[in-house]
Length: 329
Image 1: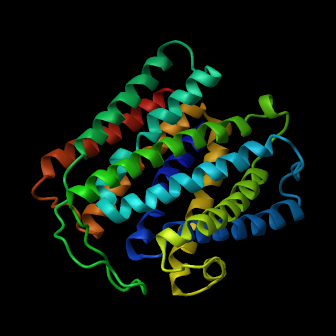
Image 2 (image 1 turned 90 degrees about the horizontal axis):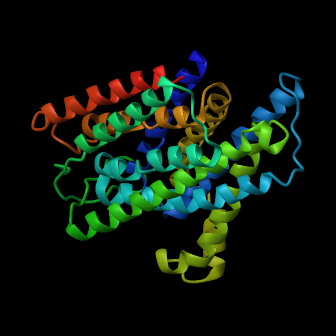
């Protein structure tokens, strides 16, 4: 159980860290998502080759109808990730994460009500208290960014963009962040379903990674072919097709993000095996804390001195929520 708790904490860090590369990239959000999928898929194939090939774990059944849920999860994730990266571009890490974090309560509630994944007695209270305190922490972090409008970064990733805090960007950025949160919450439910041997009749860990990563590549490419004319300068299908297979300096950043996401997804699946799903999912929502740290101290989106009392209170409540969720294990 302790290991499951630690894995969930590590996932919370990775879920914050893999958002950071987007701050340096102006690549089309769909292509960015596709290259994340390529890194994710490549890492998964390497892991499977080593772990199954050397017999560290028993190979899993790759021909099972339950994998269709993972494919569906991949499509939903592509939509959520496109909105996720758009929100970062428009309102920055510090603000977007609080709206995106509706995925926490949505994912937890879907898991709870779908599977009655409750623990008995007083532990139910610990779970509800932990989720409530985490929500209060997120509210405290809801601060307007202090960055001044400025030019976006160039494609080579040598400078960090300033956040453009226009009313139009704020509204559309918030809507994108909320939409991504809903997508990720539904994705968590599908991940939970396929991670339950009692339901699917087998154990799927690496098979999930394989189907999920492959579906990200396929659906991202399809979405880009359909929408690329509107979102890029590529006016013809041939040009958009060439964009998909174009390798350049732009692909480095999403590739790094994809590797981090692959590790986070693997740890998430293992944590679901070790502790109640709703608890594991709630703990991972501590990524709000790490995202705030990155947004404030690395990208300077919020003036810490100006908001130190509110931010400190939010951090303390995030820690308290983690402790309460630990008692629910």
